[in-house]
Amino acid sequence: MVRAEARGIVDAAARAWQGPGRERDLLVQSLKAAGAATLAWAVSGWWLKDPVALMAPWVAVVLVQATVYRSLFKGLQQLVAIAVGTLLAAGAEALTGNILISVALVLPVVMLLSNWPRLGDQGIYGPTTALFTLTSGPVSSLTVSHRLLQALLGAAIGIAVNALIVPPVHLRNVRENLSSLARGAEGALAGMAEGLAHNDWSEETATDWRQLSDRLQQRQASLRSARLWSHESLRLNPRLPWKSRKRLPPLPDESEDQRWGAIAAQIGGIANTMIDIVDENRTIPSPDQRALGDYGLLLCDLAAACAARADLICLPSAPDDEDAHARLEEALDSVERRHDALHKVLCDQHSVSTATTAVLGTLLVQAQNIWHHIAPDTWPRATDGA
Image (cartoon, rainbow, N blue to C red):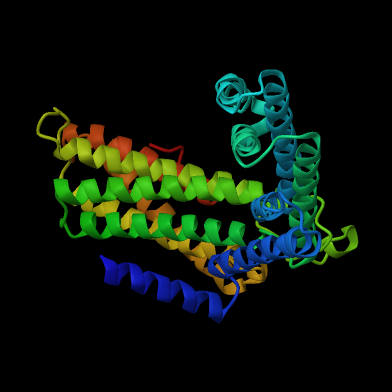
């Protein structure tokens, strides 16, 4: 376990050194947070020699957020929480003159206020600041004002460092997550195709397919998060004035997120159908092996079409990739031929069993849906579906 963790750390460090990526982003943000805290301490503790200098680096290190907009928004929330905690603690101590009684009176109130939705996840700084105010030294108007000013100083330093030193832009993550989802869909279809075409699958194999489908859902959630981060990272970012944004590499259209999310859902449907077929507790009949084999070949063609479509959206220069367009057209032609052949089999009640008609019909509809999402302008070109 320790060796695996150490290897993971070394690999992450190597990726951060090799080029841009998530690991390098984390490294840069971590160094910026450490630098902001050091600068805040240098100003408040070393230069100003403030008695509550801890507040400045404490606030600064937290406000080096993943986006400039988030730094500003979280900074405002945190300052409000700190001010409320400090002022309530000081007021309670002035009224009671006793630290223990003040803590007992203030903490329930600020803990409730920390759950106020407008403070978000920064609400917890209200009760922690109240505790620091009451337990770290004498409470006076001087220490209270210093605490608030130091919080303001730390916020200013943290936000400034994040905004002026390599302000984060999360555009690359969208392309990476979309590529991961598209390649994952291709891989899942190819794995299913191989097992069905060669009659090399079982209940355990079907469960593995279900797990692959679940991973696709996780990748889709990561893609949604990356989209949100990309939009937010462009807001209030001094690194990207309006004129510069026009020169940014274009991101895949958000319709691609919907396309691959829908394909992932259909893959999950196929996996669930296969699990139902092999489940001994279900009465779903198993279709003829020859028909399942032909269906596996159809999934293989769909995987090839997914690969070509993924090539068209996963690289900045992809839309002009003539080879990918040719491969997509070739794969779709093959999908159409196999689909038509299976459709004719299902329509011929004398050559297939009832089980094959019922179950394979469901599987064919799911494959048709994948075909439609890959290229809605080409489906169905010759038939009306199953």
